[in-house]
Amino acid sequence: MTDNNSIIRLTAAETAAKIASGELTAVEVTEAHLARIEAVDEKVHAFLHVDREGALAQARAVDEKRERGEKLGPLAGVPLALKDIFTTEGVPTTVGSKMLEGWIPPYDATLTKRLKAADVVILGKTNMDEFAMGSSTENSAYGPTGNPWDLTKIPGGSGGGSSAALAAHMAPLAIGTDTGGSIRQPAAVTGTVGVKPTYGAVSRYGMVAFSSSLDQGGPCARTVLDAALLHEVIAGHDPLDSTSIDAPVPPVVEAARNGSVQGMRVGVVKQFRGEGYQAGVIQRFDESVEVLKELGAEIVELDCPSFDLALSAYYLIAPSECSSNLARFDGLRYGLRVGDDGTHSAEEVTSLTREAGFGPEVKRRIMLGTYALSSGYYDAYYGSAQKVRTLIKRDFDKAFEQVDVIVSPTTPTTAFAIGERADDPMAMYLADLCTIPTNLAGNAAMSLPCGLAPEDNLPVGLQIIAPVMKDDRLYKVGAAVEAAFVEKWGHPLLEEAPSL
Image 1: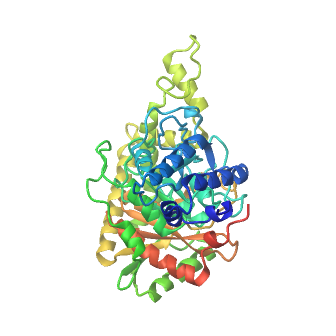
Image 2: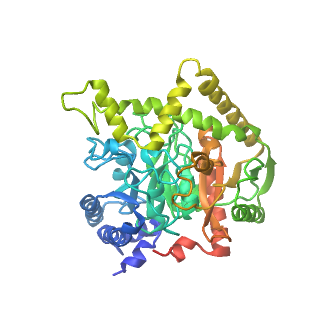
Image 3: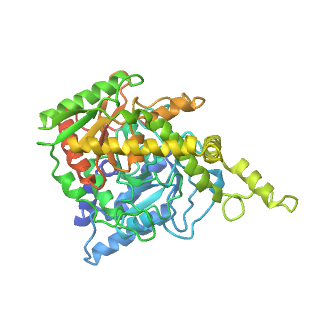
């Protein structure tokens, strides 16, 4: 009999191996994580909905499979926290908004189906910035999530619930979505691993849309190998998603098991440092570059001038697409409906519903996007932003002619205090300075922990960026760097959990 404290500190790979061998049952593992959620989530607020009965039913099914002698998949019985942006049949999906409060989807997202088919145990749905719009999870209609390293700090956004669940040992695996950095930025500030796969590598069917040309689901975990195992489960072509890439999934697990940077060319972009970057973040990044050199990589300096325009382009493209996508929330078809008492017209019901259902950041972005798309301004704003997007893609193409991967800090600073940037949207948007170019270009990127900043003892993330459909390079480099970091400093999350 293994105690709960030991179970929740296992990696996903270790957990799956113990379940497959019969050393642990899937029910034991699930109950240990449910007990942890019950013990600490009142402080953290990572979950919006815990599906206790559903999770235990999934776990029992895994145990019955093993008893029948059926072969179990690489993650069978491993618990997972699912960002509340993916539809789950019979389980609430709110997208962190009052607009969908209490909505029970009648179908599963493709990603949800793939998790269930792989016998991954879904514990529940995690908190997020409303409609994935934010960098701190303070924009959730259901209240902010705390960072388990320091509950007065943000856990990143928009997927702060998923990253906090990992850091607090409430789940060994999680799912996030990344529109401008919402997997990688939370991973960085919570000391976890987060991957934005190549755009189109993971199906968006059943994922509530924010910005359709940028949104991408991806794996979150505490180790590079765990992220690779989850990546393999959720990726692959889906005919239900017109943007899905019809190509084999890159060999991400093999790359994670055989990490090496020997002989690789690693690019360092000069635009990813300077004013606004915390000293401790730059210090840990420079140390990471030295580690890469020690491991046999060649470091190449890169100049990508259009990256300086990425933030401006993103905050025109994303709001424009959001204003189009969120038009479907009209109070007439599903979700919240306000003013339908026989005295209001359909237009008034829609207006009243949107006023009550959308939060301030969502309204801000809808207004920005509608303005940018309006007659007379389209070419000046949205059209110009798309031209910049092309320039950014060309800068990446040029860079990848010279290097195999690019590295940078994931975020310019460590986790900031809850409320610190609430009244300053521009300061909030700067949290995504290093992550946005990758979303605009559609290529793949990972964040993994590279130590703690000396001035505040909070986690710092190292970002690795790879070309389109070369996601395996992220894991090859990430696994090598992770092993070197663990040897030098230990793994802060596996050996010493943040105090809760």
